[in-house]
Image (cartoon, rainbow, N blue to C red):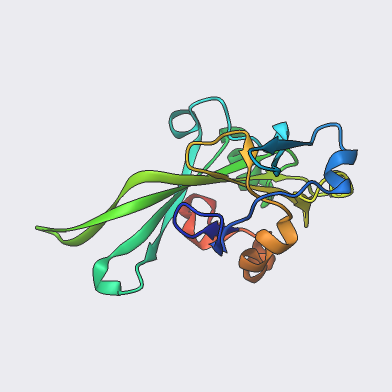
Length: 197
């Protein structure tokens, strides 16, 4: 998925933009268009919400990615930490794919870089947002919402938001970054040692 640059709604890799309500979203009982502020809307889809439980403690940590700063000597500009439900991970290890309903959460942290005795090191600081993906292999929700398709539900939540996604349409906001990982079900599994088969 694409990620918004800084704290704005601009798009780069892994991110998404503000929602203008669409007919597909309005047709779904599970998805509603929430109007915020001056005519802005955000999609609310309970199935794609950030989990209410403490997933960092209760779920399985799959792995992490660091995204280099524009000047590599400055270290990483972001750290991405990825989690999945324990049952979903077990199913993946058995079958080689995530079952329908499996939820994956990626924390996106802003970073700080310091010169430590081990060398230049970047570490996570403030939470910039979270990506949520939910498996839907038969695309049962694709005709109900612009957040569902290609076997997944897709959403990005800015900052500490857990309910109102800034994703508008997964095809324009998410798929471009995930297309290179089509062979591994749109997931960059090379960053998840636990899933190696």
